Image (cartoon, rainbow, N blue to C red; front, side):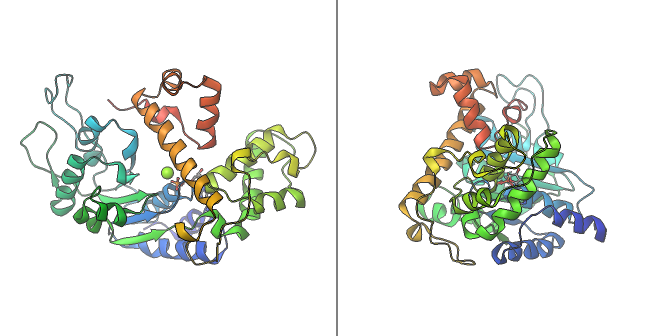
Length: 341
Ligand SMILES: Nc1ncnc2c1ncn2[C@@H]1O[C@H](COP(=O)(O)OP(=O)(O)O)[C@@H](O)[C@H]1O
Ligand SMILES: [Mg+2]
């Protein structure tokens, strides 16, 4: 188990004092100590990956590997091989064998991000692995064993997907042992000033800029926005402000929130009550869907183009700069699509 000081410093990286957020952080501390599977839900940019990492590093598995994979970013036909490995000759293109991420994570934690994107055959294979802790590499008859704690995340309602038949029910129940449910940023608006100040300090230091204090007007503008891209979107707005600000303080005019997402009425966001789609304003719901679509679209193209931005932009019929701007908006790094097969 991590020492108390390390424990505290890990938790201190999770910024936010609002009740719905603290509730999840408190849960996280307890979840980490159990060796069970965890399902993390929450909109894009709410901190699912951050919570997954914290769960691992606060757990007794901390000294062992933490392996993260975005299930939506791997070409469909390569998912099983990516997870479980393959032997030489398993495909015509498989000139050598390859270890999968499951053996790589042995003794540690495997984080399956966007788990709803797993194609059906990979879902079945994962289910078998979760039942038996055993698997076979693609093209191999040898049964292998691996001791892996699986943490899965999704920004979609997995139960609903299971009911509609696009996600296996039995897999859903296997993954959903312990649950973390991260609130959207508009459900914890009181954390916005804190997060904004944190990112302003961080990026001012990183980019060696003097202006790191926010004016009241800037804070008010940030607090009024609906943040369909959640903390990630806020982080990018503040980083842009730090880079572009002319004055000695970050003012409302420096906070360039995308016009398409500029706030109308706030979503009905009672603290502690997750806003369901039906309670959300039309504008907020639409912005959220657009953000989800844009992110998924860009990641799919990058994945198909193996991380080649020029090719991905061409496929989208967008120029490279516009495509880069979208990548930045969602904090997507082309590098993560370059590794692998
Ligand atoms: N509570 C928080 N405190 C500090 N940084 C956060 C917090 N939540 C999210 N972030 C930052 O916001 C970005 C998006 O978080 P991430 O975990 O990738 O979200 P998700 O996986 O839900 O899309 C990351 O850079 C992360 O470090
Ligand atoms: Mg994520």
